[in-house]
Image (cartoon, rainbow, N blue to C red):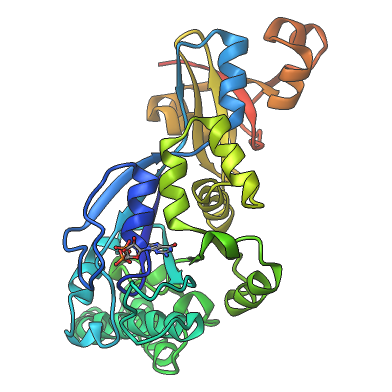
Length: 360
Ligand code: GDP
């Protein structure tokens, strides 16, 4: 499933948000370095379609798509050179698909800011710089080894290309640019180095609840991270939302001028950023959402359920969620000609409700 590593300065609300998302209560204390253990939380993505499907199919269980959140210690200026606890913990997010930077925008005299005052643009710079420095360190260690490999295997094209990509990456990073924004670096080649700045970034601004609906402020903050889509939330409100029933949570959000919880925003932006989508399966046992790449074919989608399903794929019975709901049930959808038999070449659409036929 999609995994998102959470980074940020100390005291910006990372633990508060992580705990709200994962509903467990690790320590969230008001001092730097409070979060000393890496945490991984598996979180179900809110998806109203699943409730509807469960109704139609009489499903006993609902299994949403999941996102893994990895929470690490706060990164401070100089973390990459060994100050604070930052760099050691970066290891825990090396395997994440995306990096989520939490940025403090709330004012609270009782909550210390490591750099004195609340200044989102400076904080974004600090974190970006530390991640760039961490990647430079990784490359500094790796390049001598890659050079040796390239020399020893002069005819090995892969070794030559890996070395060239690593050196190009060093140049880009030296200029202070993240690899995700670099042109002319073959970042796919560098996968084995688990670099951080090749990953897509998601920016979360942690605001006071009364600032959430402040359009001028939102525009200002959004501009800091464009073209990325900023997420706005109040980590403390997220904690409250986690305790509420769905309808009460919706009411609280609306009272704050919000249409989506932070979790729903994170999942939406995360899926979009990484080019992911979901398809659905349903039956008496369960209604379930599965995560696939946009552009995935029917056999590839089947493979997410089980690799045997991809190998033995015969065809897929597909109806779009909207058509199914409009018809009322599968039988009516079939009668209306909305249920299609699709073959190996079919490219999945978001919200396809599918039953696979396969040989095992
Ligand atoms: P971390 O170091 O980034 O993990 O930050 P924490 O989640 O431990 O939060 C640090 C302090 O800030 C705690 O006292 C939180 O209660 C407080 N805090 C977190 N989010 C907010 C917020 O949105 N508004 C306010 N006023 N305080 C917050």
